[in-house]
Image (cartoon, rainbow, N blue to C red; front, side, top):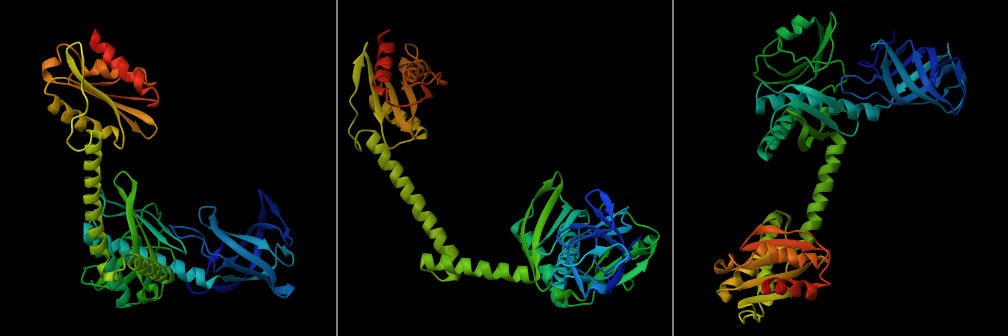
Length: 435
């Protein structure tokens, strides 16, 4: 088994016990080669409990500190053995070599901040949403954190803001993060939360942080207390700041929150400020007035869109009030024409206006809808026993490269491949009236 020293140090010495390259055990790795290296003791954290494995450096002590980089650390044999994925850069690493192992401090610090932030987030969600909240998965990486939890609906913006504010309050509290070793029963007795999917032995590591009157902890004033084998900050203030990126569904009955801490969170806030400043500059408004300015533009756009739609209807109707020319076929008045500047959704309204002006008759309209033909036909109520709008549409779209069409006897719609054969389509509608 590998002894883990990483709770107390990021630098340690050890002896290489085994090297695995591909699927084979080997005795050495030369410069340029990569493989898994097992040592008797290590400060490197092996991926577990949602926390990713450490990166860093491995140096060969009797070769003037030649060595290479560690780009991953995983646990094998049920977690008993830590494997370091090592790329040799200088010198040959051999089984039996004495080595120095150094964790990448900056990366480990970011992971610690995210992991401790996850604990504060978990408790903040329980306080905001209820005791049913339980961890269903997590990721504590150097650049972000992800937390999955049991909850059956999306969080509102107010709930997300409340959770974010709560976490930041406990960060600013800057209390020490305490760890204790005890039995699982002792841990549960003081309110510790067991984490989803974790298996615990005779002794567990309990991580506590934050002061609040919760009844949890040895003195009843611990905010967050969980069973956890991961690495954490020394004080909550070391997290820096916590920013929620969003809430989404992970699975049925499971929500997912993604967030940032520390330098990544600060950079995100700086980027957001710069984006807001750019938007404010484009709108020629102060940042505080951006929302009102955007709402005003939306209202203006809505009014202009309505005005344009009205103008298009007027054009399609024949110029804002003058009736389109109606022909008589078999004693039935018919308006049949191609209209421009409108969409298929506009056609039923135009049909109704034409029918109202005709009083008695048939209307067939063809619109160019993005290169394809949109067709609508209408029949006034006094004529539906003689002719059906559905039959008119079907006859029309057949000439336009389409099939079928549907609706009611007094109003129907269909579509064709193109408006190029519109004259023949209108002729087909008129022929149907001739009987």
